[in-house]
Image (cartoon, rainbow, N blue to C red; front, top):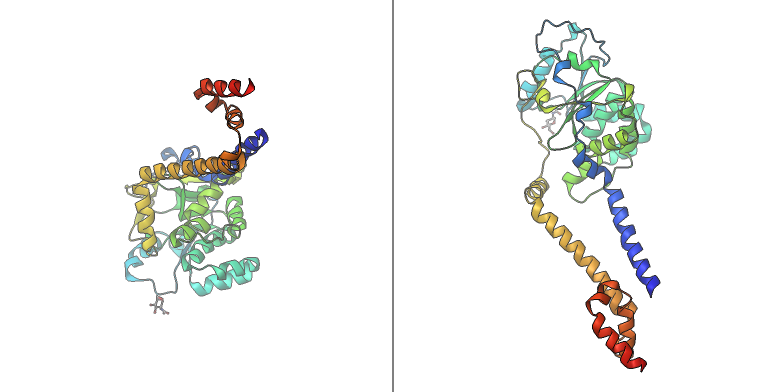
Length: 340
Ligand SMILES: *[C@@H]1O[C@H](CO)[C@@H](O)[C@H](O)[C@H]1NC(C)=O
């Protein structure tokens, strides 16, 4: 019987360890904000500054964007134009718009091992997510979401081998990113895409976790915890004030998240009610453990209480210190009475 208890405890412990292991990178996102890799304010010249930028420009002058086809909807045309105006071909900039047809052709030609996953994605936004990692690996450059406009020229950001932007409260996003071709962070990202191609029932979670910001954040944590986030492999983080909202920010926000559906309401509802949901989670978890415990006592420890002599149940109980202390007096009486 004692062995049974130890097995039960070991089983519960294994389940707990497995659960923590599974969500470890998510838990780390709550603790680590990436500030050690932040692009500091002092590194960046003000827009139009007379400060001479002596730093080498590593990232190629290419801007990548994605849309279904060439006809960009009017709501995003201003944003797109603001980036085109600040990064002209005569200054060496190239502009690549990745339409659905061009994406598919590019993946077929350059990454044939990914075609099945790419074509198999149930949501078009997953293809739009994935393609940006592949083009950054292949060509390098800066990817910008269509709903992000440019507030100033992006030249200062060309001096880092790779950068992404921080999201509040945690993690990183994939709506504006830059990298040299073949940067090892983005190589890692495209290698992992296949393993994260899972369906999480809710469209929003599936997209976030398989190709979107959550996926990128988890890979970022794994990449860092393996000690790869240093030297040329270091991924720098654009902080929110440098991202948008201030005169010195690089980007402006227009109108976004066009692909969000009803499930997003549900996620936001969960975020608003996280205290309640946490308590609910612990209550359910505690209830399950209690049920296992109860079932164990009911069906393993004693088949049918009436078949077992009273002194025996008493001695079984006395093996659990928790009970022994509570009812010590009574048990000794029972035991001694039968032993006489
Ligand atoms: C581009 O895609 C949009 C949205 O699906 C569609 O309404 C439009 O007709 C397409 N334009 C062309 C030129 O195919």
